Length: 269
Image (cartoon, helix red, strand yellow):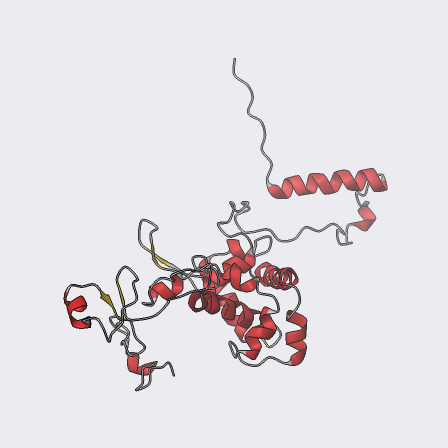
């Protein structure tokens, strides 16, 4: 014995039913009379996404996480393996959790100087700043595609929103702060040294203690070497010398012209 198929409702139909039920319960019926046909429906629904589908759960915790992924994306191979770390891998959340991050980042020159009013407005508790940025992104996403969160928009739409925000005086400070957090997390080893290791630095000896390295030269096992008593050339010949120094030239990436970003001393412009 077959059962009749249960009728399915679209999101719009469900909302119309809910609004209709509450309207009847509160007002005793709100269907307009023939004389009221010209009046606008006070319960008009927002325009829904073109396909009418509800977006599947996003891989991002919130819109701020998605924004940071746009600002500092990771690179993955066809199997999803991370080839170069992005905001997620370097834990940008750790940077955003720094107390008074906006004021500190501004003082350190991590972004162009902001008006004092913006520093005061954004320099609130970390949760408040994140909530403010999420709210801004929700507004921008709604303009692009109603009923869709920023984290669920197509990548091209996200990138365009971010580009437009950088050109908007009112919203530029928010994205500048988020961008600064991304790069501080990448190069500052706030909670991990993934970014530093990617650009060629050795792993921290103890990240928990904030100890990057106890000194050079040393053996590959980490034993410090007294250059006045030991033969460094012999250790090097055995492949057991770790002599990372300030003067070591960074490895060039195919297609990159290091002269455009490094001066004669090897410092960043």
